[in-house]
Length: 552
Image (cartoon, rainbow, N blue to C red):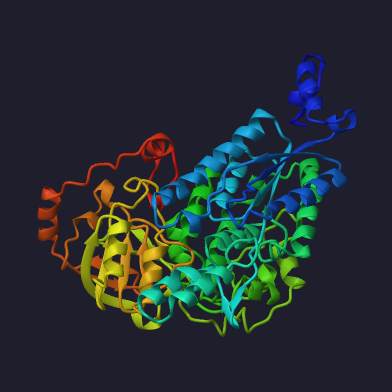
């Protein structure tokens, strides 16, 4: 066992003494050492219920013959961090989490890991770490929260808070109604109810085979989730005994399966960043070209909140990810028959799955022939940009409008709040990319305000920053190169015309090459924002969003 490096032999007497001090018995010293990397936090609703799951995982590990050790990792709630300087820390926390897991696992020579996670950056951060250290691992995503309800109106976090603020601003609801909705839209622990980034990454983790069937969709407060946690504790001991590592599970085929499913689900645009970063960690040949290629082959067969009313609860009852895999595997040659930590192949999971086709449509009766996500290119995005096609009104798939340029999210919010944004505008937000932010903030607040004001199909928003998985509307992010790296987005002026053609996957600034060349000669990027500590180190090492905003 790897843990023999800290517990076996005469010269490890001091090591054993310290381990005995933690409560390990002589019998426990003979067992494989299994770490439970827990991102429990009272601050994050998606993680607030993890203490129960830690206990279940620990019980499973000990029942299976392992010795469990719980240790913590950071967790950021994007909803709470949204709309202020705290959001600069969200994406960078992904790499911090990976570093934390790697550090503890390597320093203590753990034999295996159960990665207890849930929200947006924590799941990909832990998967990045899993591939780095490449010891047996299994992921337990803590699951979605229950749906909210107020006066018999079904609510989610987005509809009951962010979009409700826009409705209040537009005079559609009263302040009293807003207060009622905000109090009832998040009724339990768990990740927010829709197919936002947290739940998207949970679904893709299950598809790649790193978590057990139904882990992604089982409610955070359900007995089903507790059972999955216990079974994952049992399973990790088996994985250690068989030496089944993340690199045996996560490969090019399983990652392309995740992309196929992502397109069919209409998941968060952040999933593109995270899948690229996971691939980078495992030296797996996945790039934006894979997303682009597959986007022409995979229609969207599921539509959940924020783009529709159904939630993760509905997806779970409709068959969960096994039901999705059944639908895709039978009819999509792009989905390969890979095997996961459960020991089952996708074909085996699909054979036993049940599907409700009112939620999980068949491929010959899709929600739309368009995929859930798309990669746009053009003179404005030479290295690519991303859009959540599933969140775009069909009437806005092609759009030409007039640029209104802002150099921060705060400037943009003020303009929207004061009704300076009108039908036909293209809101341009620069200097919010990985380096320019730094940290590539999510901008759910401005997109939700636009939708709440009834302008979701009448106003476009483009940025070198990124969006929440809860975003809907004509919103294009991850524009590369970013303004801080000399990208053309930094050359846009108020009044310029911008054309968006989603079917053709084009994003064009309608300005002549000669004019752009002149602007480039005169261009002076804004000086780097003053940051210190962790963010300063991040800004120096982070790479383009087109390669996953990885740090080197």
